Image 1 (cartoon, one colour):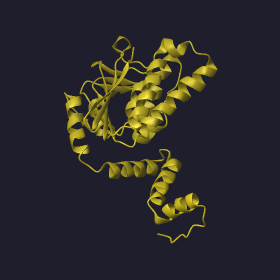
Image 2 (cartoon, helix red, strand yellow):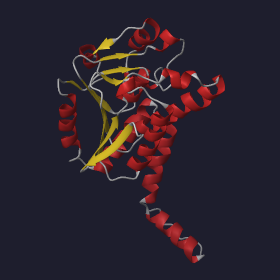
Image 3 (cartoon, one colour):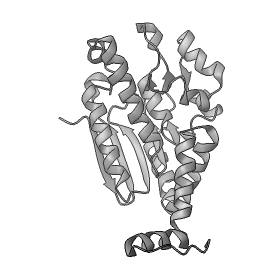
Image 4 (spheres, rainbow, N blue to C red):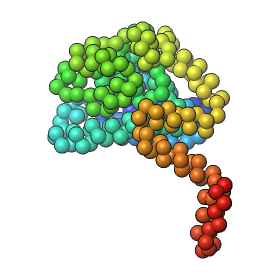
Length: 254
């Protein structure tokens, strides 16, 4: 049974975590389902993604401890940590903008998942935490990397080294969330309504440029932007035509 659902409402896509028995904790199967949905999203015509959860009390409590606890150290590092990291990176690098709807607490992997989205909307009673040290591990899905680019170092240390939770009002003051609302999904939909009216290509390029500036896969971003520019050139068309016609290309620099 799927615990990560993908649906579409016009130009808005929604990814919904649905594992309430475990407070939406990520299982191996959920990671695989998320990866498959991201593949679909990349090929869809959606202009914005909402990331939501079926469980109101907890957006995502992190990773399923019994699931990863049974893995060998090698499998834990190679597949659980590195695999999850690749999937979260893929979410962060979607061409469309994304909004995480934190209707409840976001702990560990749940906070790392929210950090992979472009902006976040949070319920007043929700909190953020990195509780990994309490069970003898460390954040593995970008909690010490991407999260440290979005929050001050001291705040990340509060959570990772001291086990402190960050409440919604403080997350707003720190700029980690765009809005605190009693109805976070409605607030996110209001943001989506404006976003889908913008030029999707301009939004995609702007997102790539912002990510490159902060070091989010900067090398790939530079090459993607350069490739997009050259693909629109007359020289590119001439080069392809010359190859097809088996002749020497006549480049004009246009």
